[in-house]
Image 1 (cartoon, one colour):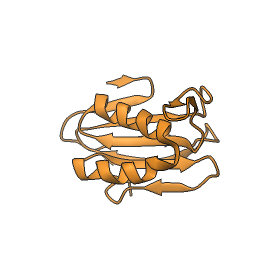
Image 2 (cartoon, rainbow, N blue to C red):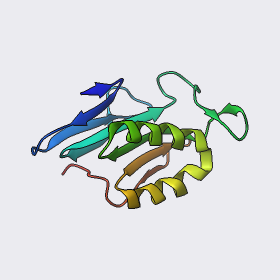
Image 3 (cartoon, rainbow, N blue to C red):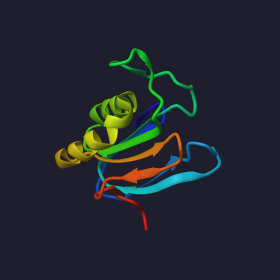
Image 4 (tube, rainbow, N blue to C red):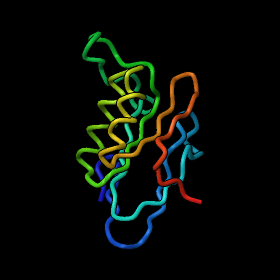
Length: 123
């Protein structure tokens, strides 16, 4: 089940989920292996700078893509969008939500990639 590009993989089997590369639609940034989990991505590569930073009132511009993996699709989607809106504060905040079972991957506008330690990257 999915909302936009987000998915909720159910059951005991392992699902392989590709996360689109934020500059090349024909490539994957990450390949994930999830079991009974949700995967949500928010980014600027499809719709441009459409997420606003609430502190500045301007479009968020630090991150190009944020993917969040966790038990609930609604929260994973909200967390991915919130992180995108946070700009530079997002990376520290994403580390904190990992303690609640929401792992993440992020790509900055200048091409740096970050992942939380428990992100279920496929072998």
